[in-house]
Image 1 (cartoon, rainbow, N blue to C red):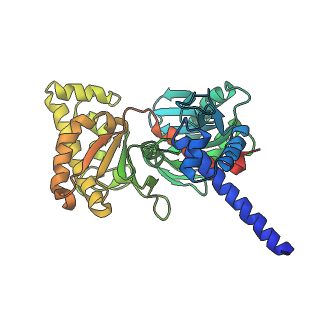
Image 2: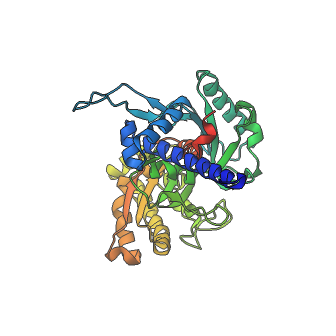
Image 3: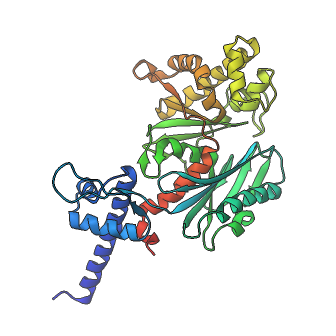
Length: 399
């Protein structure tokens, strides 16, 4: 007979197997909504009985929901389609001109949000974060009492020490060595920690994933987030390449011209001094708060200043991105934020520049795509990251 030690090892093995299979089951439902229990069994290789039992556990925990049964084309029991469940995550974002609080469900749908426009450059961090806390409290208080918040994240435009929960530096905000969590702790449920992240890294998740656990259009790409400054992220196989300390991807501070204008980061000639939103509007002789669409319209109408501004930006982007592509061999570039709204105007000259500057372009020409016009994509990405913890280990959320 097996001894106590052998029985303990077998119990641990079974527990680990169950945890792994629960995660596999939940990821399968999230990847292909409206799957049935039979579909889950076929996709995972589990027996129908095992898949059905695991789905039942996830349904009981609210991590998976059942919708109306579908009559089969052939004789048999009606299938019950499955969709991602009702847990919620809070995504927050501070940008130089925007505060955002957004609640999403596990299916990636926006349940509630609040957005406040303003000018937060060199603003008092305590005041700004208190205002953000007010936005978050407003939407959280309005949620039904039975909806469970399982995570919260804050996207910030700067260098973040995620493990310590410290914003080390955000040049365009004028913030340094800041711990935001205490300003937002009171609006979160007890025991729920706020996770910080770089805005561009989190926004890039919304390109890699169409929804939590569901693949996006691209798995390998460079992401540029155009705001007053320019954030960046390199994504390989759907994962942001964070670097040793989590600070990789600062493409906006790649030097385009050492003799160029001074940047808030302390260097000179950084990409964002030519292609950041303020730089574009200044070169086009437009107000700093003008919409990117106005710049595009003026360029289309033949305005020389607008065309010159876009030409300068496209040239600078070509120089910076060519260097990154030559080093990383990731030839797909996705433009977000204000740059995303100007993709059609920037693409021709930028793709031409990259075709000349990128060594491998003869065999695989770099492409430029738009991330669309999503507002505060970093807030959405912060919620997606919170759901990644659920998808990795749903057994922790079965209570």
